[in-house]
Image (cartoon, rainbow, N blue to C red):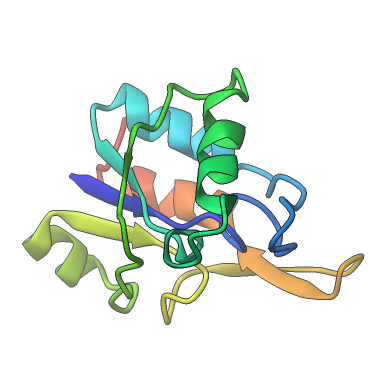
Length: 132
């Protein structure tokens, strides 16, 4: 499958133009997706800004030492469809993005913000055979 991966509010907490704290579980799931052979494409609004923040996000991901380098990215953000397993399977694409309606979200009290709930996504991916 092709996995379109957002950055702010998804892999890291919202802090644009800075890079926020890593969202718990994000690298664990990305690593599992990579090991299962899925194509991962960075799909972030940072690409629309032309201010160097896209390059900073790519550098952050690829210098983490936690995941394989992500070398593909969209040159302009693609708005994600709703989180729906019928859609995922029919298009063979999944958008992991905090603005994707219906995606599991988690509330972070310390920053009073919501981010993608990677542990819920991990469970869904396992249940739906996205990886073993």
